Length: 480
Ligand code: SF4
Image 1 (cartoon, rainbow, N blue to C red):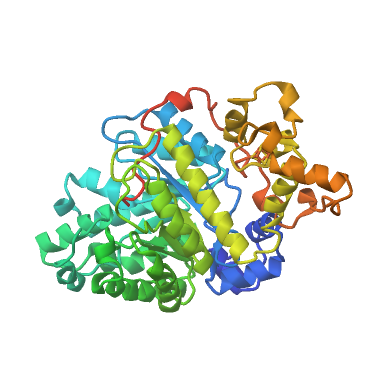
Image 2: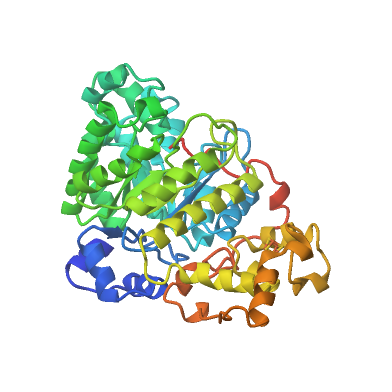
């Protein structure tokens, strides 16, 4: 048996996972195999993750959205952590990163893997630092031990901060916001304390061997991503990117799948440049971006500042978007923040797919528009990206069942409803009538995009009850 999805694809084998993602994406399995074989797409699917429904991440496929969850020092219980997983999957996360740094890390990770239909990612460096007691006390051996244990548990992909090198550190001296990646700052402090090269870089080949054995996908961390517009596209960021390109090719030699993480904070006119540069330097390996935030001025609204950049990145070729919540830079997100962040990012991902004319992507838009023009309120709610919110907002002013067929809503009112006026004019023979034409159920994109929110079976997850009131719903999203 081939060791990894990449090895199988290179040998010409269409694996069960390839068959499944081809079905979900409505694509030819042979096309999927080629994309995986050439490293242009990844299927993070640890062979020990039995509950997984495989997902593909690549620029030729529907843009994916990741949500970060995890406990902290102050809160840590299994039920709460499982509820966070449910919240993320319910609101449409395609993958989930467990960034826990509190207690019961092993139990929580195993419970996540037992229940999660979506790929689970981790940053093993966090657990290693907890076990070492401080960043300076980390050792290459401990890092490998933690990585191997998490691989055996079934983690599908891991952020590995191997690209930040000792020679890159002076390049950050003039920065406005220094090193903002949590993993990057840990590695930098270790290198400064020991006067040695990044330990993850030192043992990179050993990590590749572990990943090949269990089929873990690299998510190569961008430790030197800009934390402000002032630092965007600087020498430090691009020097690390060059190293990430080399590490990508080294992992491929081991038949290990790779995606590469990206910024951060980038002004709109430089977003496409960032994506194009990563694609060139990393030979087309999927780009997994955090935002980017396109302005620094809006704490409290950074799900919006970043979703703008995320949509542009998706259009330019980014394959996966890591969500940002309204609490970014301010505090730990709660359940409603997770919902708002995921909504913003699913919009960004879908907008990118529409702009890229992904087969069938716009059918969802067309079906909703037709329901809107037909005043089919129930169908509008069903098709909405967040059906619960669409219904709630409508029913705040017109709650009665009789308003579900009404030819107006409270925005313009019955007298000034432009769609009603337009339809009445057409019905009076003044204009040609338009017929509904979109059959969403038969759309090639239906399997990927069909609402209601959440594309994955979540029946095995704990109830969502009380999640709305739970605090500490997810870890801060940018600190990986
Ligand atoms: S009242 Fe205005 S917003 Fe509401 S359905 Fe009619 S045109 Fe649309």
